[in-house]
Image (cartoon, rainbow, N blue to C red; front, side):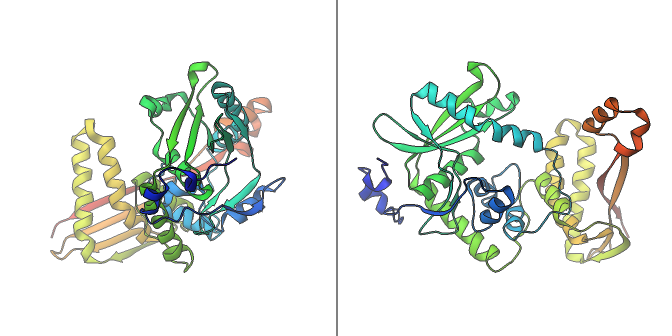
Length: 360
């Protein structure tokens, strides 16, 4: 029998948090034998567990605006699939991770091929990997992960990578369950498998729901793009995915109010050249600062800002293309014929953001 939070001995205290815990998750749709495209369409009806960290600005993979575009069904202009192997491995090994977890804990595990929806906050969805049941009848969430061995340090001292923790807490909220385990497989030995317990935190949950509700009602429902924010690399990757091609050679005029921000970029670039030991950290600051200008340029490759003091800031963000052979295509070429080079050659694009200061 499933024990919900309302059966917990701390129910009276929980009600003081302002959360109504007297509910059972709704079934939005069965996912049994569902095609991936249909599954993605249903996911657009709300925020899923893997979206939650991005919505609150804590995902290492995507921004809140990426989630916004996904919910509106907007196709990226640059659909980079470089991480498809890791994603495919993760999907195929979910059952193995769950089986190892069951063997190590003795818990009963099972899958429910459905997409759940929170009955009180219908913008919250959950497509859970597995459920488990302990010997005393407690039921919880089991989230299955695979990762590179070099990321194992993020799990040390009973830690869970924060975006995975947010995902589990989102699921606990939807399903009204008090416990989750996040299990991760790094390799093929017994020391390459970890699992971490996550107990329900109603303070965190209430705040998470408020942030998800704000994202859904203020941006997704009215169709208003959220501002880009977060790590510079993520922001620039988002711009590359969803912005138009930068092929306009004309220089656009940027308001003088942005002179200080460009001055900041200019100074940081100069400082970076002089401090090699701190270059990586400084580069992130720079990217975060100039991401707004990359967005502002639109399809333009150059921009001009005349600051209040008369200084001119010339911005360039031009495509730099090169032709080469990817590792996958190189393998194909080896298996076929070297004369097929042109057939398998791939053209990639990289952009360099530069700021030149002209003092007048």
